[in-house]
Image 1 (tube, rainbow, N blue to C red):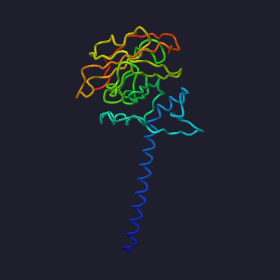
Image 2 (spheres, rainbow, N blue to C red):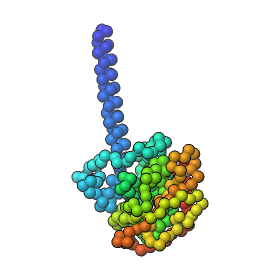
Image 3 (spheres, helix red, strand yellow):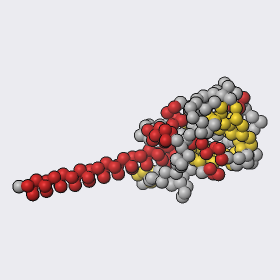
Image 4 (tube, rainbow, N blue to C red):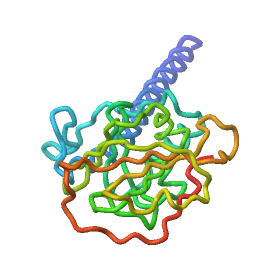
Length: 241
């Protein structure tokens, strides 16, 4: 009688263990899908999928890529906030920002609210739209995607991929300003991208300054649309704390 009872207990434990493994595997798969979905969706809808960046849809099924997000410089708080967004529904990104030198590839959504900046980078309202002429303001957290900006230099290239193609820019200025300096997002002499994050990068508490990276479009890489209208950009948006 006692042996039968022990066998039943062992059987229950085995079944429970198997169920835990299935749940764990399912959670990891769901997380992997969430991590890559924004970039994969952009690649598919924009036609930018390559052999190195395979399409997210193949024969009607989702093809997963290994997550390329490097969390080594991120704060634990930012990693947790990012992971919370993985199961949330987002529209397709406006564009994807890539900086090869620092191995950064981040989706750009429209706006700079907390949810958007926990998931990726955001276009600052009032600045040009990705792919248009003008100055495109892009913000992200200093303890997340944009912490690696500390390692860029003047002359480094960055790419902005939109549904109309990819435009290449070269960094021509890096400056540190206070949040009320709105001039950093004004139109420049040629089509530009301005990256904004809080500074210092490892400041504890609300960072008092802004780290600004300006990049101008290369002369041989002309925009494919007319100039956009810019209205009252606000670089003092709380990018990171």
